[in-house]
Length: 401
Image (cartoon, rainbow, N blue to C red; front, side, top):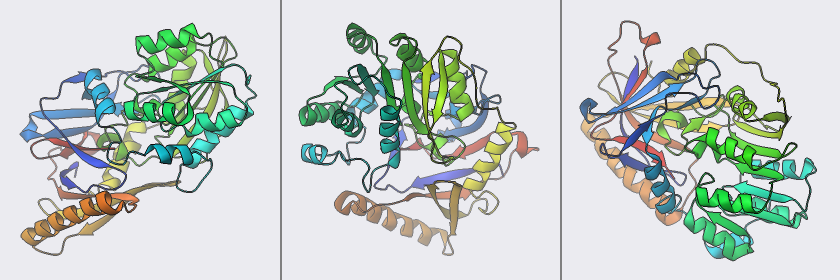
């Protein structure tokens, strides 16, 4: 087997499904943003009987993974500005009262980023900027810790407005790369600390983001980043979760940082699915992480395992449940359908409606994701060397928030 046919996806409280119209304008990223090598095609998403294709790539040198074909920057900007996180958006009262860190139900990595910014002993009167402040938990806690000169950038309009109203911070709406955002930051003087929590993997051009951060800092300035680690993040989040345009290994992230003058000096990563590092701007940055080997072979094996390709029979319907857990890679559970195809389809339609009701009316938490799949006959004499293929019906279906 060298792929699956993905017939449908269940929505959950964590994600919804987006059918990507074949007419969506696309652009190509051919080079790794980490080490700049050409990307190798790892997987291909195919729909409309081959008329719609998106390639997903991997760097054979540093292990970076990301879309080779993705919607254009304008499409992504409109997506974040208009529909990102709309289904489960917080209210003003929730933002005002729900900023405590750490607390139950909130990613522990937010508190780790907060602690790292505090521990690097940055000037508490110096200018500190968060890229993608979300609902403002970290900047609010930095204010409580005594930092006086805080500014944030937020791509989502409704989140930016909520944080401004709730806490009174200066929140610049737009991409960090936006010219007006850069002009405003530059007018305020050098940034002592720039930090972000699970943002870099969402940016269209992470190399530009890091380069611009460097241009706003003097030698000795800090860049603190938290993002998923491609080694431990569930492999299916790569090709199927559109907002994660990039998946960095520590090696690929370090290559990117070194190219723009940063050296990783602090590593607070809690496990192999999350990277949390502090990098300092230096004249001659050095590497600390040795590169791995056979990134392509490992990733292909992970995709096959995650999609249960050894067990899903060609032309036969099955369900796969998958979820992310720290230090447990690519958890996938095959739930074979033992009913007729017609009954299996009816059962799926019922479960789809039930999932919609649970997520919209009761907002009950769902830890993982369920997809309806069928096996494919291999078309390659040597599947081990071929890209993994994920087929769809009329349009590519991807997970979004």
